[in-house]
Image 1 (cartoon, rainbow, N blue to C red):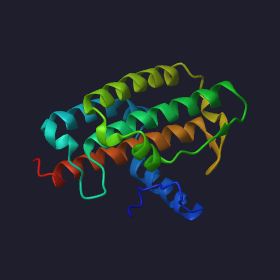
Image 2: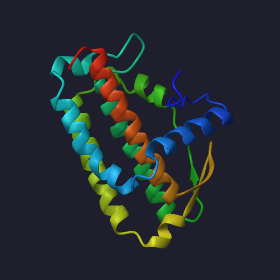
Image 3: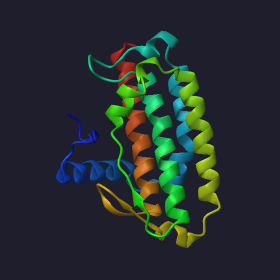
Length: 181
């Protein structure tokens, strides 16, 4: 299993390692720039792959690009809720989510890749608008994540930007695995 896998059954140590790896991947990059650039990067990825290849998983039991796009759209819903509740309420609880259960139970294998990308882009545009309207002190607002403890809006920005980078790399890896140059 990759360090970039954060299964619902992860231990606290595995979760800490996952977060450290995501933050390390982001490095010194501006998270807002990464968040703003991701939709275009996904468009380029999709344009570089024949439609049929979007449906092919990287390997048996792994995700296809279609799965990744649907996951990113659903992640954007989760992040949007977390962002809004932390901005609007004082120290709200933030629940975790089981991405594998979502993929299975919400039938990612049947998702329309173009629709998932469009949904992601629309949600991301709204989140970037919301982030652009925040006051600097809003970055310090805290939510209480069920698995990770206190999490500020600023930390969320870094985590979600790193999450984007993980899945952009995954998309490139899947493209290579399904033999698309």
